[in-house]
View 1 (tube, rainbow, N blue to C red):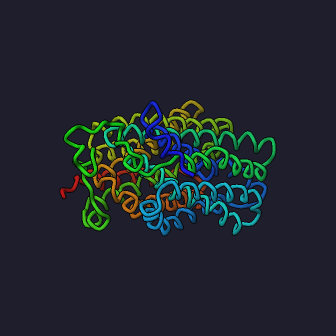
View 2: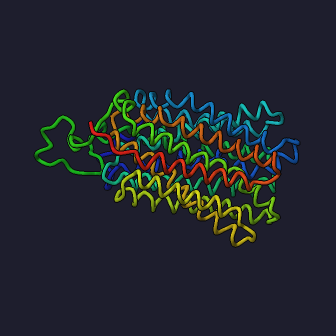
Amino acid sequence: MNLANILAKRTPFFYGWVILATSGSTQVVRNAAASLTLAVFMYPMADDLGWSRTVLAGAASAGGLASTFLSPATGWAVDRYGARTVLSVSVLVLGVTTFLTGWATVPIFFYITYGIGRVIFSSPVQIGSSVVVSRWFIKSRGRANGILSFCHSIGMTGFPLMASILIGIYGWQVTWQILGVAVWIVALLPAFLFLAETPESVGVLPDGETPSDDSKSTSNPGTSEEVSWTLREAMKTPALWQLAVGTGFLYVIQSGTNIHMAAYLQDINLDSKVAASAVSLTAIFTGLGGLGWGLIIEKVAARFCYALVAALMAAAALLFITVNSPLTALIVASLFGVSLGGALVIPPVAFANYFGRDSLGAIRGITEPFNAFGQAIGALLSGVIRDGTESYELAFYTMSVVALLAIFMTLSAIVPKK
């Protein structure tokens, strides 16, 4: 049952906003497997089970690596079967695996349950939600993806905060189970009932536009001037790979910092409440930053936006080394959150702007493994450096160097000519 066919022409506003809200609900719940959520579980699980931080972070890395193999198939499935099917199944499975993580008392079981959740976090939900939103919006694509990122930040804030409260009341095991049920409640029915693949499929146009007299005679009104690349054509352009590699570098920094932030702040003798507040502020400013970056990319070329985001990430990584008080911790965490908002918003908009909507699922499926691989490397790299040196300082220097590589890679990514 799909209500989109009934509601699309009956809502008093553009139905794309319903698509955005529905996709946003899946972005909220994907944070059940987010690195910030795992960061809240890091201390209690390590203390209770006797696992090292590298073991815990390794589950995120394993899931990220696994998603590199799944992403191409996910992109193909979004184009072939639709984002509605992909997102509905993904939310269903994410709820199951999150619930089962509460019973993970041996590493292999934890790697299976949390790892599967991490695959869904990194691939199906990310690709499906951003692709369907980018298909419904063209002129307002930047701000729509900014709002989608803001929905993600709601989950980034809500899930770690809810987890930290529930762990204090029920313990870490029951908390995982409660989070699994929350995933189903928030997103399962909306994804199944309200999603439609494109505005044209339900008889409306992107951005809620009205077809002009000239466009009424076209077979695909409102989109005749939009660039459209097939996957095969896009793969022959240097820009595709430059953006993909550059995005992967950004996610090395994202994962290498996010998943270890709370532990780092406690390592330098800041209170656990300060660490939790810093994690929450990161999530809040990720959402606020995403809204801003969504407006910026509608005015500024994507490759320059990439460079600005990477520069801000490098600055934040270096500033983490100087943190020596609760106030500086909160300021730097907020700055890092702003940069993360750009890392979430700029890539999906850039790929849609560069290569069009028709094969966007397949194109994102080919490029998303770079993000997942970057997340896997970042989380594991920071953990190994910390365990080897008993400090995160070298890890932050490493993240700043990775940011410079991202700037170099993306600045030269010129929009290809077809």
